[in-house]
Image (cartoon, rainbow, N blue to C red):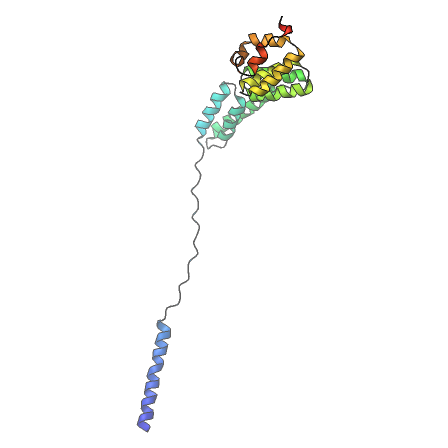
Amino acid sequence: MKKTEARSRKSTAKAKPAAVRAAVTTPAPKERKAQVPVPAPPSVPPNQPELFEKGIALFRQGRFTEARVFFEKAVEGPIIEMASAARAHARMCEVRVERAAPVVTTAEDHYNLGVALLNQRRLKEAETHLEEALRLAPVGDHIHYALALSQGLSGDIQRACQNLRRAIEIQPRNRGQARNDPDFAGLLHQQPIAALLFMRSEADS
């Protein structure tokens, strides 16, 4: 009996270290390291000399609004002397733009500016001022006539014909004027303008 109890105690004593070893040798789960965001590469600074030169080129052409944009960007460059010169040129552009901006309030003001823009083929701007002139003076045949030309050159033949018809209704002589107007030369054979201009009228006789 004593030998049997002694053996069982030995086996129990041997079994305990095995459990301990299992607990010790079992690795703990590894903690995941938080991913650190990679910073974006720094933005490349604008080429200050190139911006300044573009501004100078536009300034010499009298395109002050566009030139001011390049000068204002050049101000942010690293070359202090060039930034100072760009700042001065930007101010000059601002003054020139303010001086060049006409004050338009009346129908004739809008008409004259619209015709000037039309001669420069700045058709969208011309149409804006001519429409405003027409709003202020709905029976101005010369305004209808200029608006018809602007719309015709823009490719809006239907609206051009409507305004030209109205100009002729108010002043029939506008039919003959349009026939001989070099600006209308490219529109004379386009319908319905051709039918409007070359239809017989007692006013032409």
